[in-house]
Length: 447
Image 1 (cartoon, rainbow, N blue to C red):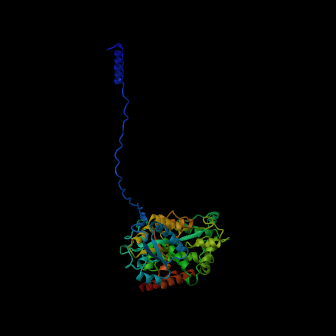
Image 2 (image 1 turned 135 degrees about the vertical axis):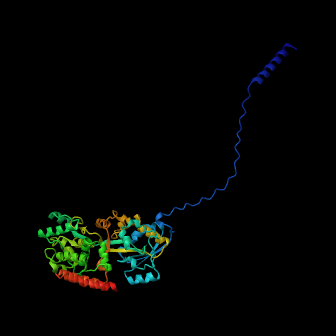
Image 3 (image 1 turned 90 degrees about the vertical axis):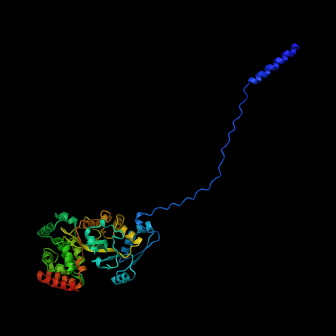
């Protein structure tokens, strides 16, 4: 081999060796995507049904509730405003019938009674006890009522009625501004009331305005005054026993009340115009005499409606400054009127309404509507009207409640009482006058 050939062979070998020692370029890594699973059909989503408010109980939207009451006009507007939260929350439809005719009510109750009845009465347990449902069975929150209300609505262990609305009569109206100017303070006991009355007389001021003239009904204001005296001196059970006849109307306790009344209602030192003024002054005029620019008296005992009459007659007077009231001092139980709730069915809608009206929510709605007073204790402190708020406190603090005796007793008994009042105011013998009433009481209650 020639020298040139050897050189060429060496070059070739060197080139091959260099190629073998060089690192080949990295091969790109191939990533394989995971296999995609076939899409599955989504499970159906169940619609979310909002829970019904507890206030609705077992009702369903569209349930119908029939009610009957004697309210109309502004009063009906107020009860509808009280029903509204229940209607809005539960979708209940309330079908109402309004009547002031007891005969219409009687016919309805005996044929196709409403689910719920609201009715003013002095003896609720005597209304259809064989048809009414025990309110405890349909969810009444009885713990929110004073025991005396439960007693008034219970017979044979069943709660047939609960009051939803009340008005009190056991109050005395006065002028705070005049009291302050004369150095008088509001009495809190019957003894303090007696002391105040005597101080007013000593000062040359007439304590009472006692006009009772009211046409054929002359005497009712005197009957109310006597009842408050009896409630103060004897207590509410004594009044209920007079109504039932268990206590005779010529009993010593009645004589005591008439003795106080005769002194205050017959003597011109104690009342405007003396006996003649008491008998011949209209009951509205009696209110005005305390609040006119130059007052003729310092006090007038009258029901809750007096506040409206005062401001109607004297629009510039301010409640709490120029006119106000206080509970009859030392009274053991209030007198007044009340509307009761009664149920004829145990439907879900009936249960919802009964539970609502006897609850905290129902009490608040009643108070805000200003529909007189709710006997539901949870309404206290919820009233927006200052006068109602004060009356509510007086009722809540009462140890009892009695219906107006004059509105409760049979006509012959009531008529005899009014005649006795007139006789006593004119200076007649108290015992003799009450003996006549007691005889009428026995005869009337025996029928």
